[in-house]
Image 1 (cartoon, rainbow, N blue to C red):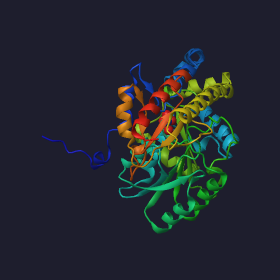
Image 2 (cartoon, rainbow, N blue to C red):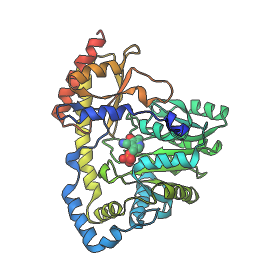
Image 3 (cartoon, rainbow, N blue to C red):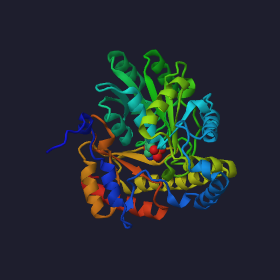
Image 4 (tube, protein in one colour):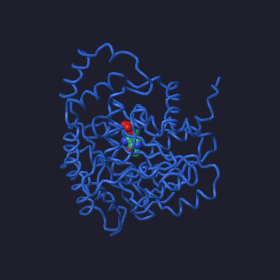
Length: 396
Ligand code: PMP
């Protein structure tokens, strides 16, 4: 007999990225596909040493249940860091530790979304945020972006014409998938619109600390006068993703609601992982570590951009990220990146076609390049081959 699954299962599709990532596990594939950090930069020896301290000096605490909110010293560190870097005014009670920032997105769906509600997002946007919100039966309206971020007069127009808008989801710094960063004016304007139309904003920022050049910008949250904006953050890209530790930050009455839904989801995050990170932050200089990551990724970004200029047809467009992990390619409209992927996989080169980053209108002539996970020589080799494949489709 066929089981009677929840209606939401019809909204949940297999992720194309996860399928491509399976291929990239083969050693000889040059992958620009995942958003994986460079594993050679994980601080393994330091973590090993800290783990021993944690187990020896506070083992019973580290292996015990803890509060849903998370380990207080870690929440204190996060609040202080955000205040220094992003212009917020948080203390530890504004912070809930989550299993990666991904869990913050899922919990946001649980807290805010009913079937049929509308989520506004950048076009294109982060694939797994689409999956997380879709599970709650929402609809999406994509708002176009330009070089300064989301286009505010379109956003305002959409806000003024729809009464079911519950959430605006944005990644204003080194966006996934485009690598774009919003200007200061757009940040201020979004905070103002979220207050005027009384809509919650999720400001997702897993890449903000990985800036190669240019000036750091304050968060959208720092301009929030209504208390409508929530920020998600993560240790995945500045430390390592395997710990699965991130956070969501916002006004205390909203964070309390997130704590309630997290209790029903998983009670709390991994205690020993939270304590290990907190102890690492006490004993080591994370800024020095982030500095190393930035140095390596900047070099890889430079090589990737140079190779795109050198080997790809002149008619393509691409972004020039000032930080983060990705650049975004636009091909002429009639060209399908999925077809190019099929050909390039035969030559052991992988990337993610852009179509699935659009929740409503798939633009198949786009794709994302990740440059953080491959050494420079493989980036050059891979993009040269990919350029040759693309040239088979585009007459020069
Ligand atoms: N948000 C964005 C924009 C991402 O690209 C990712 C994944 N790289 C996440 C959230 C989730 O990351 P994590 O759960 O590892 O913090």
